[in-house]
Length: 159
View: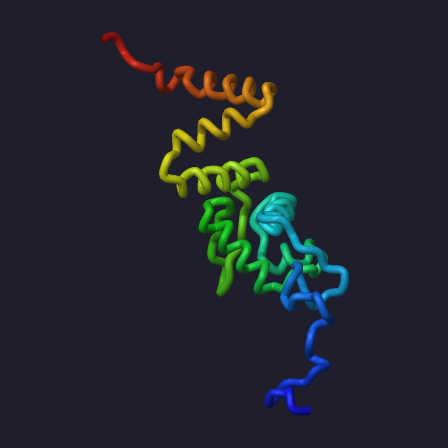
């Protein structure tokens, strides 16, 4: 076979049209590609169900072993960097606690996108103009509530 390279065998080629490494887990037949943040949301949901601190192993078991332990650790570490979870040392490892729910995680992702843009005003203007009338009204209500003084902060004093 004159086209063979050293250490290469034609049986190691993917079927025509398939890309190696495509999908969520190319080694598992029928595996589908996960959406952005889907794994983080799943790990957070499991962690919230713990009702207190949990180990990465406990989280992995509740995910039906669908993820490798190292993957769970990576996801928890990323969530920790995003301040979505807290951790405390227990022996040589950590226990993890959810500090955010799914809405909080989505809000953090939105904030990261906004923080990465140069023209924040233009991004916010486009965001608001793309909202449905109902969502626009919800946003206006939330902004008005956020602007109301609280008992701890009565707002500006006398001029």
